[in-house]
Each structure stands twice: as C-alpha cells, then as structure tokens.
Image (cartoon, rainbow, N blue to C red; front, side, top):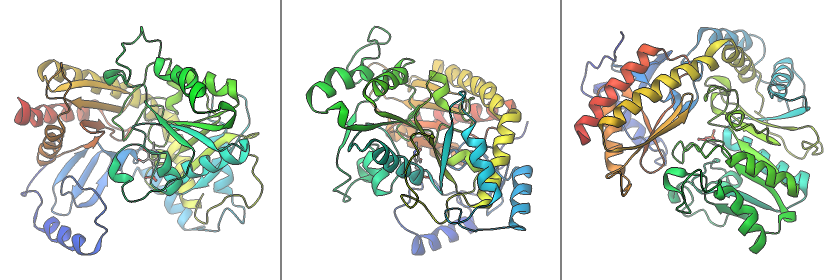
Length: 441
Ligand SMILES: Cc1ncc(COP(=O)(O)O)c(C=O)c1O
C-alpha cells in the first residue's frame, strides 16, 4: 500500500522561501490553511517543492476529477495546443466548442433540447444563469439559500450567503434576492425532525414567503446547490428539490441547479440533481468539467436560452483547449470514473462512519459519491461547533501527508479525484484517525 512520504519539516526550506515571496507579491485575500507549495502531481498524489509526497483528498477544490494530469486528458490538451489555442467562440466557430456543447446538451436523461453558454469559471456560469433567468422571464426577484456559495463576481456574490467575510465591504449587492434556510436536517432551521416535517423547509417558500413578502409572479428563479458545497457538504432531505421544482413549475419560476461543485460525476451520477429525480431548467457547471483547465458552462432548455445575439458573451469562454479537456473528461467519467465515485464513496462513507463510532467529535457524516463531509462538534447533544478542532485536524493531517479542505464553519470535505482506489481510501481514513486522535482522542 502506498503511503505519503514526508521527508522534511513542513514547510520545507524551498517551500518556506516561496511562501515568503508569495507574501510580497500575491493578493492577501487568498486563504491558505496550511503551507503546501506544489511542484507536480499525478493521479491522487501531489509532490511539493521539497520532494514530500501527499495524498490529495482535495483535487484542487473538487476540480481534478480525472486525477492530476490524467494521460488521456494531457494528450488531448497537447494535441489541441498544436492546432488552435484561441479564436473567441463568441465571434467565430470551431469544432471543440460545438462538439462539447452537443455532448453537454445531451447528457440529461430526457429528450428535451438544451443549449450551452460557455464561460471560464463557476462564477461566470452562475452570472450567466442569473442574467438568463431575468432575460427570459422578464422578472426581477430571485430566491437563494443561506449557506450557499455561487461565486464571487458581484451577481454571483449577491446570490452567495456562505460567509460574511465574502460580502463585507462590498455592499450594495444586486437587489431583489431573498435568502432562506436550506434543507439542513442535522441543524434543522425550524427545529423539526425528518421525516415528520415533510420537508417543510422547501414548502416554506409557498406557505410563507409567497403569502407575505414575495409575489411569486415576480420571481425569476430559485438558485440552489443540489448538495451545498462550501456551506458544509450538506445533503438536503430527499423531497427537498422535488418540492422546489414543483413550486417553481406552478408559478413559472426557473429552477437553477448550481452543479459547479456537485456535478460532473462527483456524486456517482453526472449531475447530483439526478439523485433527487429532478431535471432543472438551468444547470451551471465548472470545477471538475475540464480536469483542471478553466471552463464554465451554463446549460438551459432551448426555449429558456432565448436571449438575442449580443446579450451576453465572454472572450475566453469555450476555449478550444479547455473544451478538448472537457470532452476527454466526460469520456473518462462515462467509461468508469463515475461508477468508481459511487463505489469508493461508499467505502469512504463506511470508513468515516466507523471513525464516528469512536470519536464523539464527529457529529455528522454525510454525502453522496465522493462528495462527503464530516461535521465536527464539541458535544453531540448541544452540537456546539468545533471549528478550532476541525482546523487542527486538517493541519495534523497535512503534517502526516494527507491533504484535506474545510467547508462550512466546522466541517471537513472529502473530494478526492474520482480515480481514487480502495487502498487510497483506506490510507486516508487511517491518517484521519491519527489526526483526530491527536486533537480529540
Ligand atoms: C457551487 C459553486 N458555485 C460557484 C462557485 C464559483 O466557482 P469559481 O470559483 O470557479 O468562480 C463555486 C466555487 O467553489 C461553487 O462551489
């Protein structure tokens, strides 16, 4: 079994020097919880500049879906770089953009025609969905959820309600957005219990919001993450999205699924919404779509994507190299990586649940496929958030060669490349065990 190899103190000498240099020249707005300076990476393994080797359960924030530098993705990129690097798909035509649009448009399990808009990031995909929803419905109001993360450009950030620091000093935002509680059963916003509640959190839109402050006929869209990502890897109750879908349909509102983090096979299905049996009007994608190259996509039913020429575009959106990387990524997902996400996700979930039997501080273990979160608490009864412990556990894991990322206030997310093997899952669980023992054993 392969284990991480840590040969120097962390950070090592080269890493320390580079981190100092970074401090002088790189924006201080970035959040680095531990000092990893990456040199190269392959599959699920990352080497730092001092030659230390780490097991990567972050995939560069759920991006390197096919593993770092998958040979087939690299080959597709190299071939494309010899042929065409850029030609502005907004003003001209080229094959990779057309081929990828065709592929993405037909990924849904229905016969309905879809169209695709391309950008270069998740924020841009959401921004496009936001504008498209207004443009198509000619309505101004929108609903989004507390805990949601939709990006950091001003439109997307207006929909985001994840952490105050992300919004501090940036007011005013785009008006007309109402945030409401997400379906978060572990900390039910209404203090109810599932299933007796009947997913009241979703019905609340019609039962309260539409009767008191929000005329439904003025609502353009409901923006929702199928599984909340940055907010804490929160899986809502099974009826949640179906209820949102039904409400949206009843009032001519668009349901926009932000699949930037949950999409592209990560949960064991191409789109996380498939777990809930819902096909939304608009879907946003980025992160894992191109295995590490920048690409965002907004997919909508053809009758919804009815904006006029000139309404919206981006110079770099649908870059041919990114499109080729995405086409190969989708092939790999369909050939077996999506199925692997399901199998290895089950194994990881079981491993984490076994640790939960040992450690009181593991309040909740949840997820689908390889999108799994663990929420750390000081006390299982009071559910007091153990944010400092969570941070310590992540730092301990790093010192032992396991790369993890936090999410929400007190959770750790597990989002490895979808190529991860059973052995690598077991190594992750055993290192995590040691990392938790040191803090809360
Ligand atoms: C659900 C979701 N939407 C949008 C974004 C924004 O994506 P980007 O950072 O590529 O702009 C993210 C990023 O974490 C995300 O998780």
